[in-house]
Length: 445
Image 1: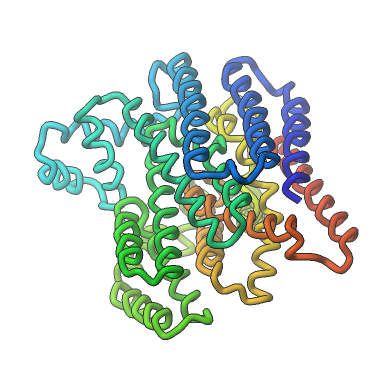
Image 2 (image 1 turned 180 degrees about the vertical axis):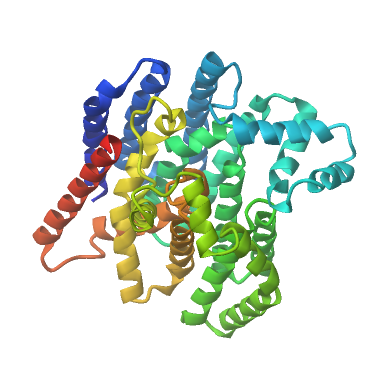
């Protein structure tokens, strides 16, 4: 199945790019060239690592591959950004310059004074990025310092995702799951920008990694480390922390674990009750006060197109298999930089949902926390009509790769088999064709 997905990926990408090439204006031709180069390199990396012996699937080889690949593309994206805009924020100047300017405003203050000053006009849920940038700007005030730091963050994401994936699948497919996410065009774009998402993704992956290390070894130090990483999420996006806690709590409650797991579940729900008011404030903030005001706000922002029902349908679809890629655009430059990775993510939607069906049908409770977390964030983003926003969906996307590769691993090693194999293969190929049609339609809408 993985070989089929990789093959369809390269042909579908070529089809989409060449079919949509008449829409290329030439205004940002370097971005178009980089996008084509990106999906070719991505496919080569995935196929080479798929066919090589599993003895090469080590932490060190993964770290080297991810670092070198990321370095090349971060360098290229920053070079193109400087060529077109004169800065290294890679066409994301709004939030990136805000973070940068906020840090430069407090750089000469003692850290605590700087934090108090920042919190005087901003909420704490963006404080994390300020704390990341502060020590880096003491070394150099260039955004390139953050990009360099993110190269190492990318390696940590890759190795931690590799560790997490091995809890559920063979070493070979755990390696491929980690690599396919860690060198995807969209995560490399965030490594190249001045945004907070790369660091946030690292914290989310590390939280799950150490939680599962605790489940396997029962060593308290792993649980404490997981709790430290979870607490850091509060400084970036508190809603994600709540979703992870609920996912872990529900999974522990319905798992086959012993008394210890049930006790953890009990204390998690006690904790949720204790912070009920704070959770309510977070929900009210994201919904802008309620469903009616949310819809009004989205209509004002121009995010309701074709009616509320149609908008929700598009958001649900986008979260289920996407976000959907925009291959060529004269106005949305960012989307072209991360399209190659999103095309692959769309195809992984099939094994992801097959995993969900199998896991809940046969009660593979170990993977419940990952699936519940992904589904909760997908549902929240769709409800808030933010389902088309890659930035907001990014924290759960690496977990999508782990879940999807669970099925790919079990199917390709014939652990999962169907009585009517040929019929399933035809069904699978039809689904792939439907996804290609959807992406084609999305780009001609």
